Image 1 (cartoon, rainbow, N blue to C red):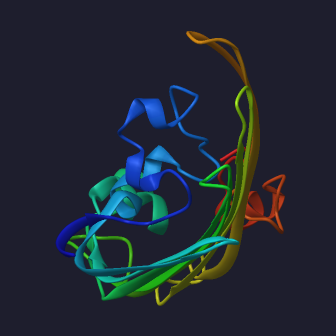
Image 2: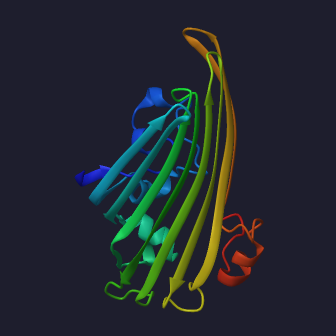
Length: 222
């Protein structure tokens, strides 16, 4: 495929706008955060898809080379500083790869996704932030079981980010993580109950935010 294509990220990114493909009103924010929707949902580039099936299941490979789409909200969240950030991120060529294994015609699905790419920050007029570089490398491990009445879905995301050239207060290497476990049970053809536990950390090594507060002077809960 060529052009603007939905990124094959995790189990639900390609269908995140199709309500009946998920149990909840919102997707788990630990893996599919709405605050970086523009970065995740699609890109402009070239995508390839391959599939191999046998008696033991099917193996699917999705790969793409593309240019991410960044908006102002995403830029201010990455750099920090809110409305004081006046520049923009210039996205470089990125890549994405997803390997998915399906067993029993999709009753079991196991997938691994990895993406990577970087962007240069171009300061605006009277910008307090210097020119720098942002490198983002998310990975997701996914599992899903879909039975006649009972379903179980879980995904774990590790998000590695590197910021360079922005100054001592903003330059850092950080690993964020998120995960969720979701169970569903169909009571009747029109009724289903769902229970989800969802957790996310901006920095897996600073889960309470104390180091963030000491470095930036901002509240730890951010």
